[in-house]
Length: 141
Image 1: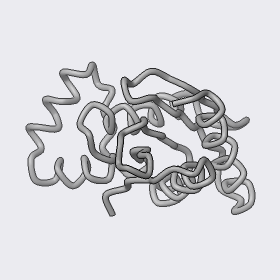
Image 2: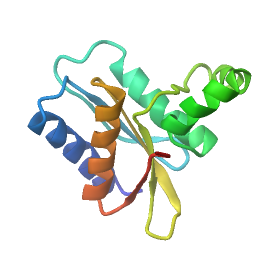
Image 3: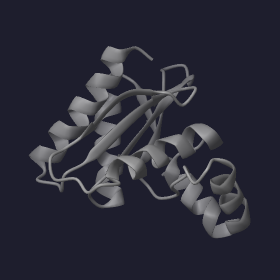
């Protein structure tokens, strides 16, 4: 994923959050191998919001599914998700707000994770950013 694409995702996610008067957000965009391509934490975010946002996106890359789907799996297979959290050093956050980024052909480009408002609002901002970049959001909803 190109840097400009990741920056577009961050900028649009934050634009929507301000337009909707959401709480301050942390946004992390990872490429398909899990490396950070772009990130921002708004003024007023709490200390570990970035870590939560990163964990939502990282879980998506690690397991190949959105954080919403990981949450659903945790409800059915708690031991599996707990094991994944342990294997990844606690970096998997199984709540909505981590969305896979796909190209038009379905290829995995990365994931975006957002934390700061409700999980549903976090996820909506992910989707807005991905759409602004001309890509496809996979939420699992």
